[in-house]
Length: 108
Image (cartoon, rainbow, N blue to C red):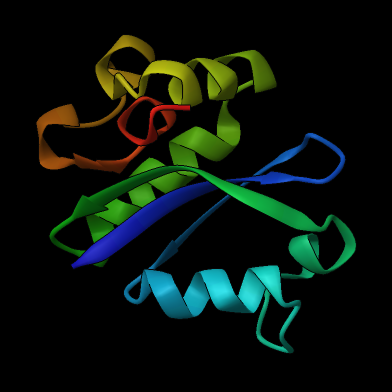
């Protein structure tokens, strides 16, 4: 299983990445471990905003790529409602991704 995630950084920027072990990866980002991303080393990660899962690396990489290409307003839209199909329906097979975490599920 592969996970695609969006992190909110201290400066309000958004970082998007993929991993097979979400707990390990979040620890790396939030503690600025030597294996954290170069981006989150200089833009302190503060919060996991969104998380999807999919069956393989190819699908995960496709979603990550398309999210990274979006303007910040569209990334914010994804974080707000996580409806990939509203933003990326013409780019990827949206039914291949399952929402794992979002603000609404946490009651925030």
